[in-house]
Image (cartoon, rainbow, N blue to C red; front, side, top):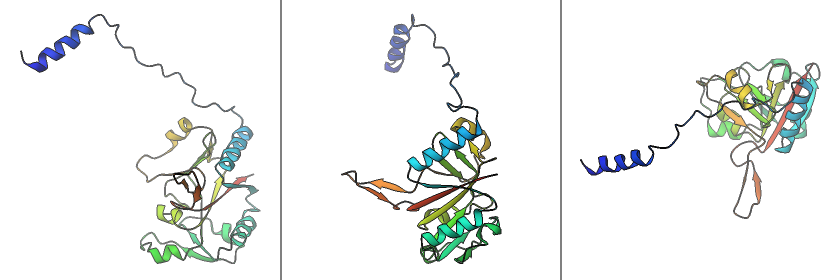
Length: 211
């Protein structure tokens, strides 16, 4: 008998009278939010604002005017437009539109000269105030949403808002490149001085579209 066998034998002997391990209970709640669309939407609004995102609510009809107003308010002269974004969303703005071509490289110069980006999203999670992008239609490449100083993200309240992470995960495609956003980019130094815009957009404006 070698040393390894002796050690394992002593462990088995010490554990011989230990009750068998049972599987952990998986009866936790999938959400802690009432099954009420208005309550879920209000919670999303509250948590997004708590993360210092600027939240707006509007209708599909009023969306183009609001987008134009937000771009003007932030002096955004150029806005990146991902493939698949509804053209009507930008129909009221005078900002120069840079339509992204997935086959063209996103050079540092090109990104640095883009003031803002507008995207849709895959899902928004109310309990965590999180927006999820996966590069689908209207969302664009990851770099496109991380470099411009202003990110305007449009959420469709009817079908893109869920209460919790457990509700979100089954609706996500794990093979797609996901970006999870909870507020604008922020970090703190050793003295806890908050700095925004280091790892992503300094300004996050979320527009929740209701009907």
